[in-house]
Image 1 (cartoon, rainbow, N blue to C red):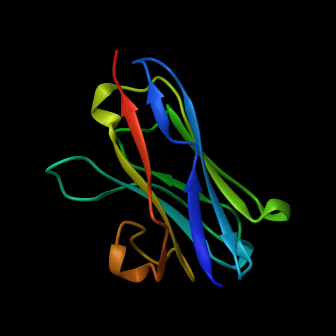
Image 2 (cartoon, rainbow, N blue to C red):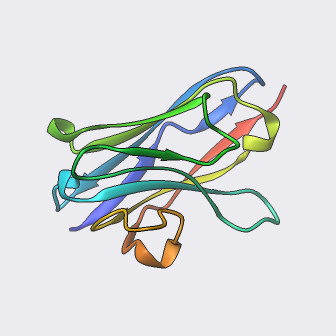
Length: 125
């Protein structure tokens, strides 16, 4: 079965860290660009980060630059999102998704063809 599965979400205090994982099954992740998106309650889903397939170029939303790091471990068929210095506004459901290539705009959701079910991240004291 071809699918993506996120894990690693949870409750963390402001300033804390979490590492999200996006594990693929049924297909090799290294041939795909992987994006992370999030959707907060009452808000539209937004792009957080993306890593390309060919040279592992990385892309970040301005709101997370310098605090979040995306990486991939092709041997484990997994992509990670390390989130540091978390703020309450990071509270959202986080999704990973795959696409054949980054293209000209990694934020275009319609260009991603596989999506995970999401993992909840809550930043609160």
